[in-house]
Structure formats: structure tokens, C-alpha cells
Image (cartoon, rainbow, N blue to C red):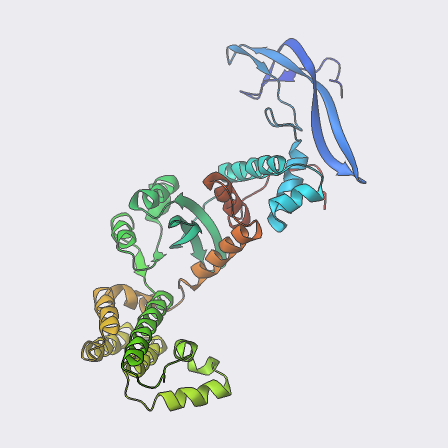
Length: 383
């Protein structure tokens, strides 16, 4: 490639024409392969003496970005395929290296974050996922508006400092317009949300409540199974875990018959199971007032059950009563079910590549898959 005669070079810093200074050695830019053959653009870059910037700078070219050896079109092409395949598979399919796929994704994600429009954000969901062994977590914040779901922010570790970074990144103008926040019962989250989103309706929905309820029931079953085994009694509860944890309507016919036989025994596990099933009626209410009355009565009965793990759940529900009832005040339109679905997609992104070595690579992959970021414009689309 040669420069057009008489054309002025563009300063890559201020993006305006500048006086020429000299010409560098020929560089090679890699383009999208055509018909199974590599394609390269060869061009000798010019340097300009830019008076506005006060220094000698390499010119800006429309097909390249800085010192990258890939053209913009090729980086966009690789990044689109890296969203469908693992990065290693993308590199093998187009006979390039993993590092070049990384450069392509980094370029597209960085451009997308700089040019994305946050707009009006009414509802957010906050959760964490484990990304490596040794209790290493990511804090993820999603936009969960009706009709719009996307990843807004990724933070390293599950700490107050990490979550604080979300509010700093979004800015006070965006944060002040948030109307609904969905999260779990982790106290640092609750405290920070109260401080930074005091006007928003904070919702604790059924997913986390039912999840904690199942953990408590399973603990009661395990403890009672061990006690019966030590006392030499019949192993009535053997292989009954999923009978008790699954919803009754999801059980098969044989499982329903066995559950019916199990419920005839006066066991702590059976009583805990009945309490777990009874709390499901809470979600049938539409009125916050009636839902509150039902919740208070359920907690009262549970505190009298003398079942330790279930009493712990009842105390937790009492402490978070108003946050639970916010689900009904929001007319049950929002829940953390959307957040859990997006978490599953995040886990698929990690599983597809069998994990990532560094946090930076994982962060780019998640933004690329779930962020719904805008992409740089391209003269041609290559499918």
C-alpha cells in the first residue's frame, strides 16, 4: 500500500492533519484470511511533526490501531467468533495464536466500554460467582430491567471495597435513578446498598430464601440419619435426599409413593420438610400485608418446632422481613431468577474455555459475552 500523492498524514494523538516528518520501515498488518490464504497489508508508516501536540508522532491509519499487527476488521472478525467458540478453538480455526485472539477481544471490549450508553437503569441485580479454587469470587452487577438484561460491571473478590467500585464507575447520576435492587442476604451488600441506593426498593426474593431453606432441611436430614445410624435404628432416611429437596410436582410416581410412606414417621426431617413446603404458599400472595401476616405466623410456628437449622432460617427471615415483602411491593415483577440465569451464562463462558489464567482475561471474556457492548464500525461484514 502507498500513500496518495499529496495527502496529509493524520496525527494519531489529536486526530488532525499535521506536517510530515519522515517515514518508517515497512510494517505488516494481518487482514482476514480469504479462501484459506493469509492476507497481509504492507505499508510504510509516516511520522508527523505535530505542533498542537508538540512532538513527533506516528500517523493514524484507518485500518490499524496503535502498534497492533492486526487490522481492525480482523480483530472484529476474531472477536465475534470468540463469542461463539472458546478462544483456543477460534485461534485454531483461523490458524492464528491465542494471544492474537486475546488482543482482538481486548480491542473490541475496550472500545465497547468507552462507547456504551448506560441510559436509564431502573433495576440492578448483584451476586457473586466463584471463578477459581481457594474461595476466589467475582462480584457481578447486572441490569435487569424488563426487556433489557446485560452485565454492567465486574469486580474482583467479594468485598465491600470491590462492590464500592461499581458505584464509583457508574457515577452518582446513574445510581440516583435506580429504583430496584435485587441481592442475596449477605450483610455487607445490604449495608452498602442502604447507603448508596437509599431511595431504591431493595428486594430479597424467593430464590435465595428457598435455597437457604433447602440447605437447612438437608442439614437436618444428615444429622438425623447419623443419629439413627449410631442408635442402630432402621435407615429410613437412606437415599431420601432428593425426595425431600425436590418440589412435589417434580417427583416421579415411584418417588411420590416413597415420600408418602416417609411422611408417616414422626421425625425431625419430616417436620422440617413440612415447614419447607408450607413457606411456598407465601409466594401465592399478592398483597404485602397478607404476605407479612403469613410470614409472621410461619416464623412463629418454626420457632416452636425445636429444629435448630429451621429456627435459624426463621430468625433470618424475621430480620429481613421488610426486604422480603418488597418483592410483593414490586408486584413480583422483578426477582433474582434473572440474575441466576445470567450467572449460569457466566459459568458457561468460563467452562467453555476450561477457566482463565488471569482475572483480566476473565473480565474481558465476561464483558464480551454478557455486556451487550457496541462494536466498532466496519466497512464490510465478514460472516
